[in-house]
Length: 462
Image (tube, rainbow, N blue to C red; front, side, top):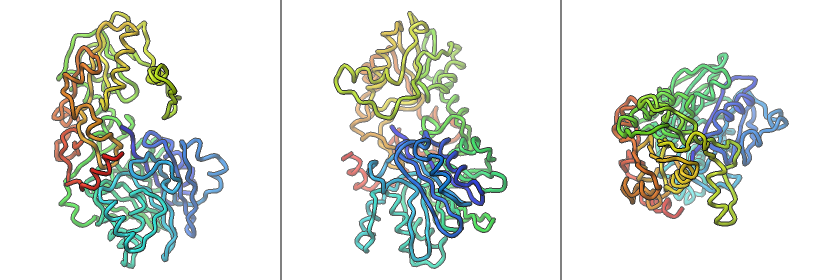
């Protein structure tokens, strides 16, 4: 499974562009395909976007050319729209009758196809293929007079996940969908309001975390004043915060949904040790997302924690493997075992999830080749059985090994001595909440609302 996007914005700061650049740096884990920044000086919006990591997109010369006291930025991993089209890189910047605006979107709309077809029938012309562009067209076509009313008029037509930053020549607006799927938090830096997908972006620039943007809330910053509004019918939308943010996506040093990711992730490991104990000599993580739950498992079980697998952090997202022999080396490009730690040991391996199972099998084979006597796999989340339609690029159901095989069959396939998943009930309890707070659809198939058949068919064609 792959990450979706990260957004960052700041208002009324002379170094708005540079702080946005740093904010995107901190949020790089949320998207590595492309990055963009839009900024305004109060008269016009300038922007720069390109494919690549933040460090390669924004050279010093680019940052110097962008100017403004308001800025928003976006890191992208595509969940909707082709990843190779420059028109899909965000923020989306447009000029229309009443001026300019820029939009940065984290999430995925399940009714985007339906809305797009209707807009095209009415004469709208789209440059890209993202669902985010639908939001821009809805705002522009609204017959309301005031910009906030235009925005609300557009938002009430959306169904799905959206944490948005919208910038005009003089305003910065933050919005979170009524279900609250994706995180969005608010901070303050020397009197400047700041917004980001995760609080780790605040830590980097020295901003103070204030609170989360609430589900269904619209925060408008203009003329030095901060105003809060609510989307209509918000109370009819069940809170559906993505539990997988805690499992894998968010950085462990972030605070999301009002909770420390590190603390929740460690609690997952502790609960996992209670649910699936096994006699062993060492506990090792699959880095990086397995590290914190492995610490929790180790502390709860009393079995020593070791870094038996070392990750190469300088590997790109793709690895060219021209023949079968080199394909088998693929996982070793990213992970390398330490034989001195593993020789003759009974090993518990902690990972965040099993998607197709192929990587887990390669890791277990690697550990055995390095001398491990036994390999017991423990997963800090329940079996992933259903696709996500709200901003996570999951495989289709037929490609998710847990949707078609029992735990015993998966254990045999990955060649582990035993396999244990964290229970769904244990996960929710460890997160310190209840089922009414979180979206757990990828585990139990219970989506917060009906998914259109067109979206399911479109996902199956991927």
